[in-house]
Each structure stands twice: as C-alpha cells, then as structure tokens.
Image (cartoon, rainbow, N blue to C red):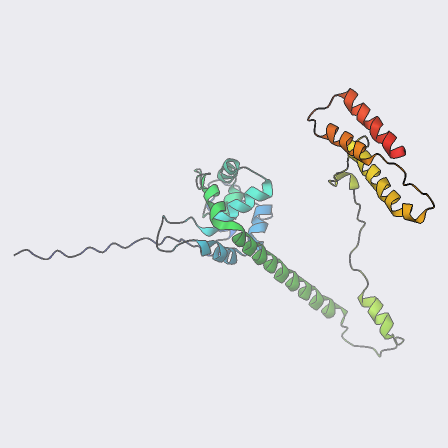
Length: 279
C-alpha cells in the first residue's frame, strides 16, 4: 500500500516590491566614510519634494502582481528616470552616475551607499515601453498637485505670520480716512513680483529664410498676381496685363527640384524671377 505523498505547496515571492516613501533620514543613510553628507544637496532637497507614493501607484498600474519576475522598487525606477531626463543622460551614463554618486543613491531610495550597479542599463528601455504616455501624465499631475499643495501651505503660513506681526497688543482707534471700493480693488490687484525681465530674442528658434532664397521671390510674384487679379476688374483697361505666371512657375519648379543646382543656373533663375515680378 502506497502512502499518499503530501503535496508540497510553494509560496511565490511577490512580483511587486514596494517601499514607502517615508524613507530613512539622511543621518540614517549608510555611508562608509567619516564625512557627513550635505543636507542642502539638490538631490536631498528634491527627494523631499516628490510624492513618491503617488508616483508608485501610477507606475504599478501596468505591472502584474502574480506573474513575471519580481519588479524593481518604484522609487528606484522613477528616480532613475528623473535623473536621466534632468541631466539629459544616456541609459548607460544614468546607471553609472547613480553607481558613483551617493546623493543620487539616496535620491532613488537606497538604504546605503553601494559600489555595484543598481540595475542593468537595458532595463530603462523596458521601463519606457511599459510606462507609456498615460503613466507620464499621471506623474506630471501628481508632481504638480504636490507642488501646488506645498505652495498653498507656504502662503497660508506667511499670511498667518503677517497677521500675527501686524496685530498690536493695544489696538488704537481707527483714525484712517475712508477707502473707497475702487481703491481697494487697485490695492488688491497690485503686482507682488519684483525685478526686471530681460528677453533675448536671438536664442529663439525661428524658421527665417535666407534673404536670397528663391522661394521669397516666388511668393512675391504670387502676391503680385493676386493683387492684379483683384484690381483689374476695377480699372478701365480693355486687356489684362500679361504676367507670364505659367512661365515663371515652370522656371521656379525647374530650379527647386534640383538637389544641388549650379550657381550659374541659380543666378539665371533669380534673374528670371526678378524680371517676371517687376514686369
């Protein structure tokens, strides 16, 4: 009689490994050197402003919790994507920068400084395919919402401080002159910003053509023909002036269709266009 063999149940590891954004403080970050890390570093400050938990919710939407390999922590992935786009780095350079920089390792949520790479650079390609446009839009909304919330907190705190400082202990009688409603509106609409804005138009990208571009002459010819067509019925001329528009159009297309026209042909076409336009 064969004994019934007990079925062995295998417990699978969770495919999604999530760590809360309530990460350890900078003092708790495992740092092998004696010098303390700078709390005013830009990556440290930025890590405190990003809503990591909300970003993780959007990131995990496209992942399966029961199949596939265990996923990297959302903060590690999202932090690497932010570093890549902020510094305009390649995938390989992004991984190397995180490997060499302890502040970046703190930014992506690692518990301490490590010498090895956090992940392979090829993973960033799969991450971009997996996330898609909808996930990036969710990131944008979450970051903007957190920024607006922090801005409201700062403004309310400043208002409370101003009201507390401006309120005297013994309020004197109000002897100030009456203020009309129009004056109150003007005072409320007074700008609070200061400084001078200098705009440099030389760095703005514009599709400005070269002055000797043949297309400018062609457009001038077409506009001249339109003006003639509009004004001719209102004149006393018996015959419409000849504009040679078909000939000019053929000459323009003949030079434009050439990949590298010679200078002699280009000069000849320019002269033809000028002659037709002036006539």
